[in-house]
Image (cartoon, rainbow, N blue to C red; front, side, top):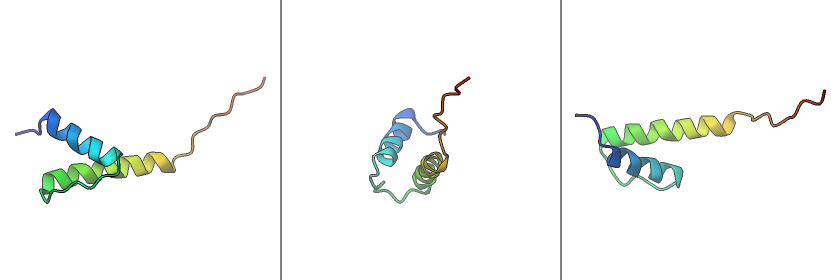
Length: 54
């Protein structure tokens, strides 16, 4: 059974707000860690905000 959108949203909000999950469910922890890794990867990437002057 796929996870519900409410369940996914709750974990997403907890992850983005740097809250703990408060659960020991392996599926929830895996989803939490997946989102956490994606956020960490986005922070590591440099953003080029240069405007080319021609």
